[in-house]
Structure formats: structure tokens, C-alpha cells
Image (cartoon, rainbow, N blue to C red; front, side, top):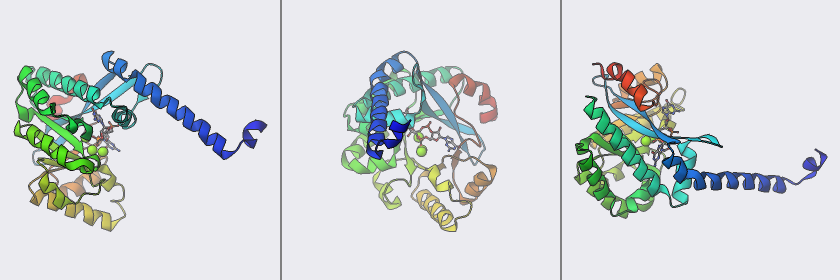
Length: 279
Ligand code: C2E
Ligand code: MG
Ligand code: MG
Ligand code: MG
């Protein structure tokens, strides 16, 4: 004990860095196995259409139950996969998973649009649009049954290449959303260069909404401008009725968050479908 106290702060932090690096290496190293062995799976979070109160769309979110490290969140392993040059593997898996599930739902009479999160890195691939088209054809799915969400902050970093790929994906009829809007440095005016259908405003905006008037005005103005530019506006991370009602008053089209539905395994979503879709 005494030895530990006498060690310098630098040594302490260096040791923690090592532990952290070791964890990251293990995550990167075990990712392909995790994907192959079904440790990784998708959960689906319903979005609510405000005009009708019904669910027409779900977002696929990745989960990983690692055999030694326990549950690892996508917030941790996705950036590592990007860093390690393995995001392609993850995204191919995600597209396969989501479209196979989508085909099963269609066959069972469940008609919805599934959104999948892709990385801005994926947009570097010249073959991505063809790969998406080939999968839609394979599963005999209409293109508008797929939505792709791309995070704003990373998209803006390398725009020219990304827009080219996004244009091709959009031309297929696949829907596009800008995710986590407001966390990057782009302005709303910049959106007009992007071929997107939907803007998803980041949940960070909701944090100060209770006490902070300026945040409320910024949020309301962002929603108005995005709608005037012709985008559908979704707000993510709605946790309470109070926040939900205020956002509805601000004119959002779609809401997503724990208040409405938590992310669920496919089977659980099916059990809740009649309720979510108001059949
Ligand atoms: P995102 O796409 O912005 O997803 C929203 C996150 O908010 C999800 O976290 C979701 O579980 C969480 N969330 C949902 N409802 C609420 C709520 O009411 N309150 C709060 N505070 N949070 C809520 P999750 O699942 O941990 O995913 C984190 C991020 O990881 C995602 O952010 C997305 O950027 C990325 N991600 C998830 N799945 C994938 C994937 O398959 N591929 C890629 N490339 N990225 C993914
Ligand atoms: Mg998303
Ligand atoms: Mg988001
Ligand atoms: Mg987010």
C-alpha cells in the first residue's frame, strides 16, 4: 500500500493507459470472432411518427456480449473498429443482419423501414452503393425500406468523397439521415449540399432544455429551418412525457427515445408490434 502511495501520478496514469490499451487490443482482436459467433447482435428501437402516433420505422443498434469482457457498447467498439480498419467488416455484417431481418418481417406482414448506422469511413468505398443494391435485390426488398444514418460530425470532415457515395445510395431509392445533428460544426445551411431525407437532432440538445431558454430557442430554430429546407426532423433520446410534449409543440415529425420504446431484440419488437403500429 505504501509503495502505491509513493508512486508518482505519472506512473499511475501510465499504468492505467496500459490497461486501457490492453482492453482496446483485446476488443479489436476479438471483433471478427464476436461477429461470427453471434456474440454481436442487433436491437431495434422504434421511432414514433407524431402525426399518427404510430411506428413506421425502427433503428438497428449493435450490441456485443463479449465472453470475457462482458457487454461492450457500440460507443466503445465502433470507434475502435474504425481505427483498426475493421469497420467494413462491421458494416457488411450490419447490412446483412438488418436486411435478412427485414425480409423476415416483410414475410410476416410487418412493414417498416429499418435504419442502420454506417460509419463515414464506409463512404470511402466505391463499391458500397452496388453492394447495397445487390443485397436489396437478393432479399427482394424495396429500397425505401432501408434507411442509412450517418453521423454529422465525421461526415463533415471529408465531405467531397462522402457526398459522391451518398448521392449514389440515394439514387437507389434508399433513405438517408444525418445522425447526431448539432454535435459537429456544420451549419444547417450546409445541409442543402447533402442528399438526405431526414435530420436526427442529437439528444445532447435535450440536456439543458429544462432550465435553459437559449438552448430551447436554438433547438426550436434548428427544427424550423430543417423543416423549411424540406427535411423530416427526428429528435432522439426522449425520456419523458414533458420533453416529448414540448418537442411536439416545436413541430418535430418523429421522436425516438426511452419514453416511447427501448431498443429491443427482433422477437420482442414483434411481440410489441401491434401496439407500436396500432394494428
Ligand atoms: P446513435 O445512432 O445516435 O444512437 C442513439 C443512442 O442513444 C443509442 O446508443 C441508443 O441506445 C441511445 N438511446 C436510445 N434512447 C435513449 C434515451 O431515451 N435516452 C438516452 N440517453 N439514450 C437513448 P447505443 O445503442 O449505445 O449506440 C451508440 C452509438 O453507437 C450510436 O449512436 C451509433 O452512432 C453507434 N452505433 C450503434 N450501432 C451501430 C452500428 O450497427 N454501426 C455503426 N457504425 N455504429 C453504430
Ligand atoms: Mg443512429
Ligand atoms: Mg443519433
Ligand atoms: Mg447520438
